[in-house]
Amino acid sequence: MSLRVENLTKRFGVKEALLGVTLEARDGEFVVLLGPSGCGKSTLLRIVAGLEEPDEGSVRLGGREITHFEPRRRDVAMVFQGYALYPHMTVAANIGYPLRVRHRPASEISADVERIGARLGLAHLLRNQPRQLSGGERQRVALARAIIRRPQAFLMDEPLSNLDSRLRIDMRAELKHLQHELAVVTLYVTHDQVEAMTLASRIAVLKDGRLQQYDTPPEIYRRPANLFVAGFVGSPSMNLLPGVMESSVFRRAGLCVELTAEQLAAIGGRREITLGVRPEDIDFSAANQPGWTAARVWVAEDLGNETLIRLAIDDAYVTLRAPAGVRADFDGPAWFRIRREQIHFFDSHTTEALR
Image 1 (cartoon, rainbow, N blue to C red):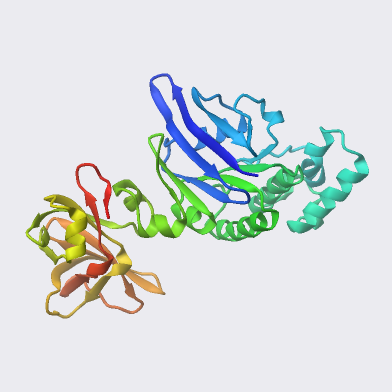
Image 2 (image 1 turned 135 degrees about the vertical axis):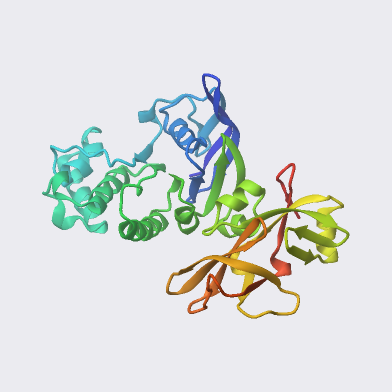
């Protein structure tokens, strides 16, 4: 069952929350809407749910246009950030509520509640009330209530944001496995790019109501469409260094990089460009190496399995990943080398990637 939104535009007064957004989530796909606060991702989800009317555009589910359907006619299930459980009901009653309002037989509701509860590890909690549950357990109840409806699509609005970091990691794994088993198309909203990369079949990156890129997580990471995507996706984010071309050499502050013929062809004679490089594509040394660039250690963070090092070169900074145990002293010497074959280039004026 595919879900397609086409040319969605939504305005709140003079503010354009969405502008001409088109994307399709194929049958069984887990599509993440990713972007900073105010980018339009929750507005898009609410339009699909029927909680907002678009000013322009359409929504189709399974080939059927549902743009102006009431929420109850759309056959979608929504999971919210705040769980939205009924505090006076037991876990079993909360899970079974969508079936009761559809006047399903009590025996069928009870069987479905037990089946879904067992699947989500809630069997021993069915007689409890929400106040007796942890945050992770409440979120599983909210998921169970959505699943029991057997909807054509799941819509999830930052459902893990209220959980602590350990619970979020555990729930991410549960969500991904569960969605794979159910094979139901899912739209998931988050501003957390790590969450997006680990969960998504495809990611729709939004900024100021406009779709910036829509692709698989590896493609978005390796081939960002523009400067915004390059800087937003990745932790730590891509190093972005504006500079100028002088013949076949990129220059910025104390950094000089000789480019290949293929890279020069992609740049196409532009003079002002931005060089992008991921932290894992920079080598570090505490000893001088021929052709390496001298720098100052600005800060080093020992994470146990690796060390993140931030270097200063004149008025610019670069962040790199070094193996665990690498020493980077504030008062010691430092050199680095960018792996030339891993460089990205962007037009400094249009911000688009040069490929």
